[in-house]
Length: 463
Image (cartoon, rainbow, N blue to C red; front, side, top):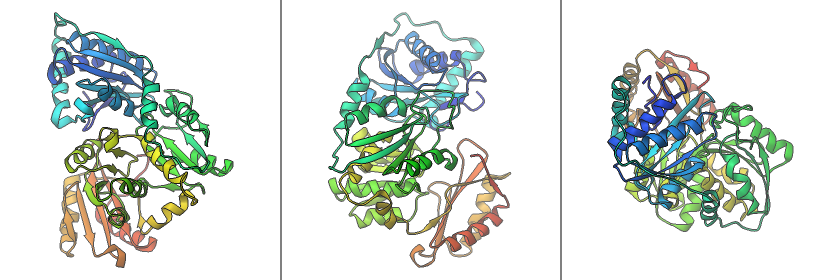
């Protein structure tokens, strides 16, 4: 299948291996291998040009396999998680390729209560079924086909539910939002209409699966430039950029400076801990050391987790955490069925800023304690051998090592000049991903040069 079955979802180039027929087979596979005849699944989709046909064929495959479909239609990915719980279905599927370009599409599959599904646990069985069906043909439809239920008014109900988490103060704010022509443009105007104390300055809200303005991936610095310019030119209090399916977002302060998502995680954690003091808070292991420090300073229990939404969602459930965040701009909330929500992250920040005289930059300033590289990618010929080489090198120097996700190396205490890095293999590409942090920019750059020399590779651009 040319790798369309990923670690956390199904995704690939449309017309290459991923076709409407394969979408049908994925529906049949889910009905045969994961769910049972008579079950119902909540189906939603994004605005990509091929999503309507992919959605229709997925639904047909599920129904031919005896599974009922609750068809919500256009929706951001977090709304799929809501729909699974709202309609009490056995699971759900969002048709989307998230932040990927217009030539891509895919499927995010969840189980009961929006429990994430990954390759090792479930999707490999879907892959086996699809590969067999491509060779031998799909089985005949079952004797009792599933039924399709068309849902009307779901967006109004979803936004009414999300409005229940708003605890806005009296301060008025001017907020610029770049929806990147993705699903943020489907609901954000309607959300802000309910809250006129905020002036919304929209950018690229037109739903357009060709992404004519820029790629809908705010994790890439170049895709944040329009948000940064908007904030500066319009003198706004806050800027936000959403990804294609609106489960992730990145923030820009009133000065037009981007705020890394690990620091945003810490900021939101402080707000969550005001409501649920002492609770566990999750952060991914690429995050700044300032994050666990901030959580502890605010009375919480920091819990370090692996990278990836399936791992973070499981950890949220296992630890009873109220909130967690990743460097990628995913923010996870127990109140959102233990799933990620870009809108909920925005609500939390608006709750904070509208109740404070301080601007965004002053809230973030105490978290800018150290100097981080951000994530840098390197292409190496043998990732395992390279990781082993660095492990042996730093073990000989007396470094603290762990293997929660790739290799993490810690040398000394960062507050007194120590430093650390994490190096992990990509789940989707032949790359090693490096995150390094030190006390000062000079120390950071020196240690980066050292690690890069051991890697024997130059950074890869465009990822």
